[in-house]
Length: 119
Image 1 (cartoon, rainbow, N blue to C red):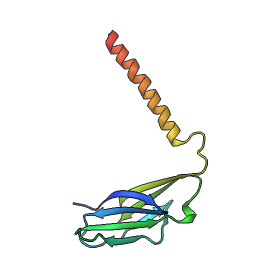
Image 2: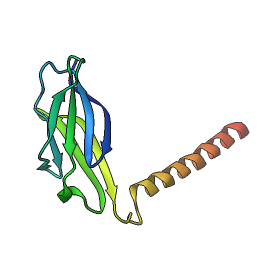
Image 3: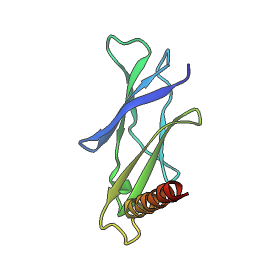
Image 4: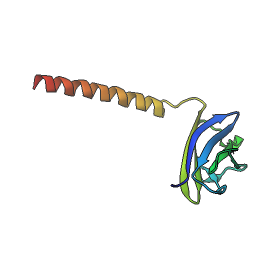
């Protein structure tokens, strides 16, 4: 069983997750646009062998308009990713694009179902 991070969440400017599958606390590195995030903490979860809490303070320099993505890794292997969205969303915001794709998929689905019924 390899390392795995579960229960990732952001609260109070800190991303936190629970890492499982380790005997000892592994070295965790967090990158944002190739730049290492400082202050990452890894602590054992009391009463749960092989589980560790990973805490990542979100630095002020990473808070910018648009989508900011962070990569949590150990030994070069990606364990988790998290993103922040801030500022005015651009006209072609990813969520707007996703909404359009869903609408188009629904349209195609209805057309296909109609074709099958008529055929």
